Length: 265
Image (cartoon, rainbow, N blue to C red; front, side):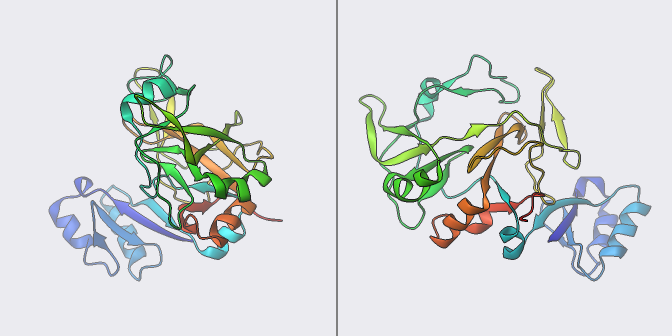
């Protein structure tokens, strides 16, 4: 694992920023970043401490071996833009009666998703929905052949809105939510000033936590929400078996999933 540290440019004076960028390995990209393995990392860290600010972990990179040793992996969020859904139809897909308008938490799916058109597939057979990262779709035949035998359930997807029809190519994966909590101590948290609930930074800065009680399911979602602003989604977890399946068939890039603290025996 390699951790990248960063500091916001707004936390520094122009002179401090210029000084920090003289450290070998430091670079500017929406803030100043430097790897923990950079030659001048210790120098950069000491400088920020002297200035009364500090470098924070902004991201972590993992190797394939670290993923292979993880019993459960977690989705990064985002992904290939394979299909577009009809935004207006979300009022049919979700029950928004409990939704907090300030933080986006607590919407409940009660109806299928409505896609604008039938997806066209290439190598990508499994993917998250565009901008709703805790919802996953799969090519129907690939799902039947590989995912259904693992016990992953599915639900239909609709095509069109005015005269919807059941998709002939696509299903939505059923992902059960867990009630067991995760230890999110290392992650920045944001308390909603409207509903008082907490959600967490979407950054993955270390081997990711898992629920205290990990369910015996091939795919599941966290109780906790992540993201900032008006959007919120739950983390999606898959077992090593599912990850190996996705990687071996090259249907969703392996780096989309990050390792967790739950290691293989």
